[in-house]
Length: 169
Image (tube, rainbow, N blue to C red; front, side):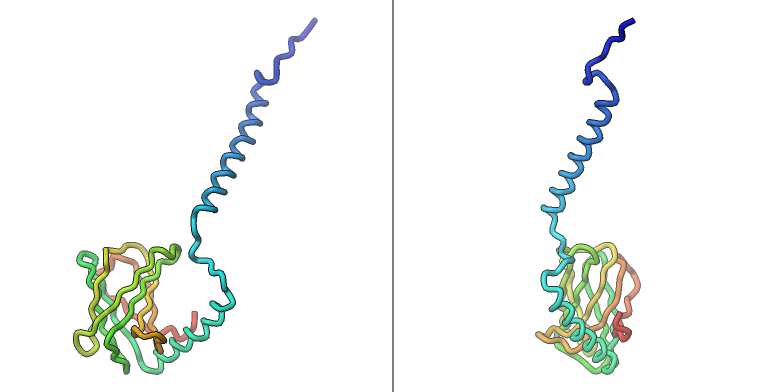
């Protein structure tokens, strides 16, 4: 009784194991290419300098609370009009509104708001926005002395109340 031995390339398990190894190589190469070609803007090179900057921003929050600063922000999702009603001691000529996308640095938006009357400022977004954004509002100066923070889900019909972040979180 002789049994015929089949060549290895006709066996199912040989191809099954080679398929798993081949799939691992293809997936590893794919992830390597993605990691090299995509930029992660959330990672900073000089983390020490960024860590020291936290003290400066906390002072801006404290200063905003001392000055009684608050604002109501309204964004028209059709026209892109941005309207801010500012309360408190400061009445700068221009405000800077930063809309920060949580996960992609390249999607951040900056809008300069012009004063039209006492405490009322207007500006224009270049395009309609969607999803969740962090909001930061301060006077448009080289070294802003105060800032107001908030979070908004766009499009949103009602006004967003911006307050000083006293807790530092």
